[in-house]
Image (cartoon, rainbow over all chains, first blue to last red; front, side, top):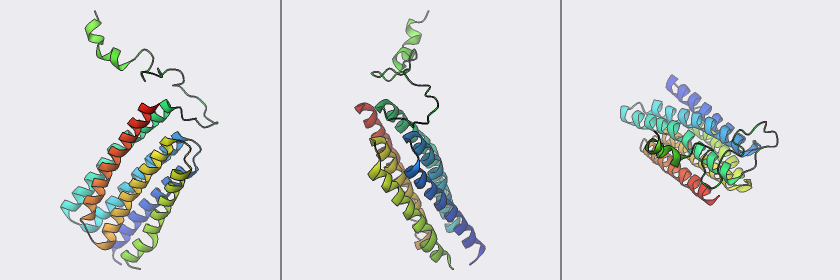
Length: 132
Length: 88
């Protein structure tokens, strides 16, 4: 076993451990938003480490570029997807954990138009037309 | 212990346990968004499993499969979120 194999094994075991941590958080966290927080961060890091290990193993510029482009894509899209799901779940009225200290958004969203109070997307769009 | 035995013996079982956990949430999940994030987690685990399998079998083509799976799973998650938001 040479140094490269040891490095790849360390990278893959670390990545798999982060993935396992994400799965455990998904199963054990008490609340949808806490589950989303656990999954979003840990699984992003785990995927990054596993694809980095593949990039190190093949030692080819084209393959390493594709693997790192996939890592960049996952790093960019996972927070966006998590935000969309959290927003949809908040509108759907998913119950929060009983130990939640504060919900700053409570009562501030229009339940029909899904706009924040005072700052609606439609108002914001035609604001320059009726201003001054 | 060679690299291949390490991957087949340690890394892939850990990832399979992660899939089992995500599947437990998919079965149990009290609400629809819980199931959506469980499916998202399973496809993310699929990306990792495909990357490890590419290394274990020495098949660099599988990296392309992983990147396509990343694209499709992002689109699917966004579509599910749209659907949940419209339904409410």
